[in-house]
Length: 193
Image (cartoon, rainbow, N blue to C red; front, side, top):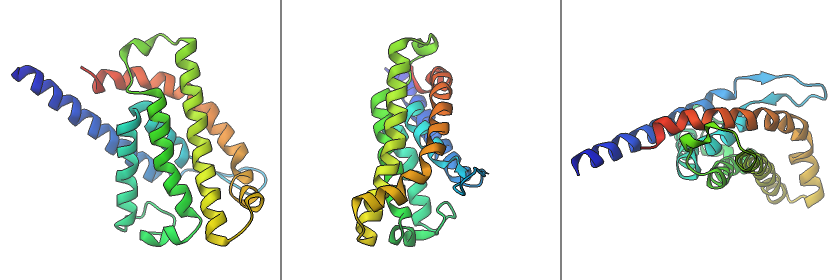
């Protein structure tokens, strides 16, 4: 019984460490900006948000984003606007979307398993759906928040909160799916018994 408790403690510690690492990746990813034609740059933050869920699963992917959000609320420079003031701007909706995206994508993918080393059609489809929904949730939350915050129409909110980011998010989606399929079996070695 003592060995099982020791193993459980090690697995929980590893999962929390991975969640902290993903929180840090989300935080520092805002500094990696790739300019695109049209004026809206490609920022990697939401790529790491979705990866947190797809690689760690729903619970620990959600924990990673709660760590990130808590750090921002406490004043760490992880939001574009530091502290709780970020929620008085349209960014607040995207921040809420980060948590919901990681949680949803992670619930769809589940905790990674070592058996996922062999890429299957079902696993690839699950990761693709989870990743797509993760990016979509971020954009939808941002747009809905923008709509209520600025008292604008739904169409205006979509035009301002989704349309400028579609091309960049499709590029990140194309990166996220194969990256998730490679990272899940690696993470499974540390996150499972």
